[in-house]
Length: 516
Ligand code: AHR
Image (cartoon, rainbow, N blue to C red):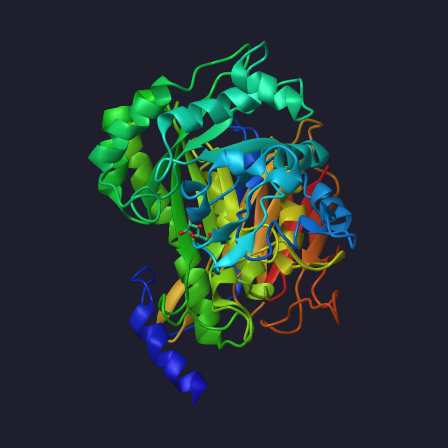
């Protein structure tokens, strides 16, 4: 019964992306050309950023756990797992929470910090034991750049300017003295700075015209200190709000370095999104169809940005992206705790290939969110950590960090489901600083294998090796009881003959290839 209801919902909610076709592509094949001698663009490692909010158990219970003595400590297991992802930055403290957060609540002796109620997420009390200095210490431990989102919605220009001074002023000043008194004499060199979050919604319900004026006012008072110059990031568009992009770029494009665009993949409706783990092939198809719709959104926002900024000085930051399911049964609806299956992994790989292939302006992205919230990397119980399938995709894609994008041309074939089609294969390629070429490829079809005939143009390669992420079922996921259900394995499905590489992609799989 549930399956039939969902089949109808899928038909109603599917986007008109696909070409109608009654038949599955008969050959099960795809053709890829990698233009190995045409790389000019760097895939910024900042495409592989993370977003961590004071929400559910992302910070408290995720990075920051009880020490058993009435206090808190860093979750070493979580930090250890994240180190392997070479996380470039972590966007913090929100999200909607950012426009609610008053940074002075989270500095100084912990016993003196006020307890607040997080009315944005779950109505829980928070003791502010994790604040600015704890976050910046976490960034140091992860080797990640800080990215602070300041409060425009319920804050003031003075409050934000003071925060900027607290983290960055190098000499003697009221805020630098306060930082030193709290044990941190040296400035932190925080550059990535968000001026509000979703100011069109939870950040203040502003019009783009009103927000642009506010943005310019705030920007005026965030000055460079020492060698630290602000890299200001404006609230960007929600999904297909092209007017937001147009107005903010026109009115304030010169003040900013990035526009923070948000797009979530929701299979059903916002009221009934669907289960993370119990789904049909129709829901698998819809998830991927909606996820790759981000390509069209990015290209249309690019067109508007190009009008005001043809030299691409302003980056499009995909500041919140990923799958948003119903919460796991029995959990606090305000905590957004969800499981993560092979479907999430494929959504991640297809999205990251799109970001890579648009790396000329998509120079930053942060998946929502890192631990225990939405499409997370990790699930935690105390200091026990489970790596999700999405974690492994991020681990595969570390090969692309700061590598040179190699343009690809892909005839992907179709994955057709009930008369609608999407490209069956996703791919991107790069060459790293050591001259090693990597290709990531995914087969979005859960039933049929694909043979991808790949022509490596302009480079002589003599060996190929790889790793694969797949599982027996679409719904496969890792749990505390069975943490290794979905994990990487060596891949032997690729072979070379001269410059032609033949790759046999099993159904529902993600592969990373190394070519030398
Ligand atoms: O990631 C969860 C929420 O989604 C964020 O707080 C908000 O920015 C977005 O609407």
